[in-house]
Amino acid sequence: MSQQQITIARVYTLEGHDHLNQVLDILQKQKVKGVTVIRGIAGIGASGEVHTSSLLNLSLELPIIIEFYDEPQKVDQVIQTLKAKLELKHIVSWPATAHI
Image (cartoon, rainbow, N blue to C red; front, side, top):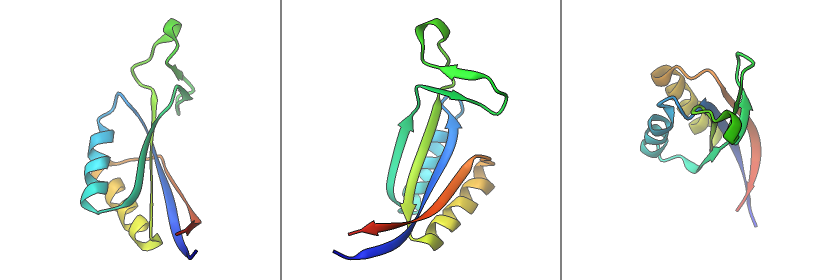
């Protein structure tokens, strides 16, 4: 088994915003590896407001996490593209090791 150094990145957004398809288009065009979209059941935004899928307080702005990984240089380049084209403010990344 070999190892490869990668960077994992997460884009945090809300489903009521039109970022999901735009981010996926960019990631697909850049041929980024390992893309996964996670839909949250609850979250607290920058305003401190709770967004939840509860029937009592149904929000149309549930959290969406778009996670991807690739070689560190490629991830850095993609993050710069995402920030420039979509003005995304909530992107985090960290180094990791892939066991392939």
